[in-house]
Length: 258
Image (cartoon, rainbow, N blue to C red; front, side, top):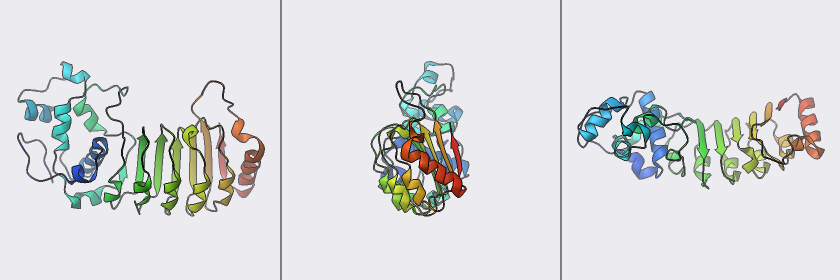
């Protein structure tokens, strides 16, 4: 087990820095290793004295900002390749406890913890669940190389090409948040095991006909959680899509609309 709390340089290497260019993804992985017992918990009470040689004060100015030196210290925690087999999921909350070590009173309103690059996820051989918000254009081909992935939730904060996900043949559950940034669903036809599909946001032009070619689909939800001015909340239930929804209902698919 790796212990991060000693002051000074720590023995061992962190393979994450070699394989994963996005520091927030590295912190996500490190948090999972902590949760799995592979790395000792990292606390502010230990990290700040180790880095600065003085006690941690949650009510100092440090509590109100991203502390780069503390982030670098955490990022230096030794992680070897064998540990990565313990990571089975990456959660929506990007770093859980670690975020509040780096920024003790983080209010969620800044972009320092945004994920901008998913490279290296395929170095997690047991990854089965991925929950991540994507704030910039990224290549999702790396996700397609996660051979054991069965569940994914992607918060599409920008328009994304989701077609590489067609290669994730074992995917059974998929949630797309900010679905207004999803251009089409045709690639879903390539997912023979997809049983649950959830679209959240304010999509206005999606063609739902590919859902008719998904034999394993048992549950579909279209939840309008964004309210852009001038959009029609019922637009996806008109025309061909209305026929699709009716056909899914007849087939026994659980359909939720709101």
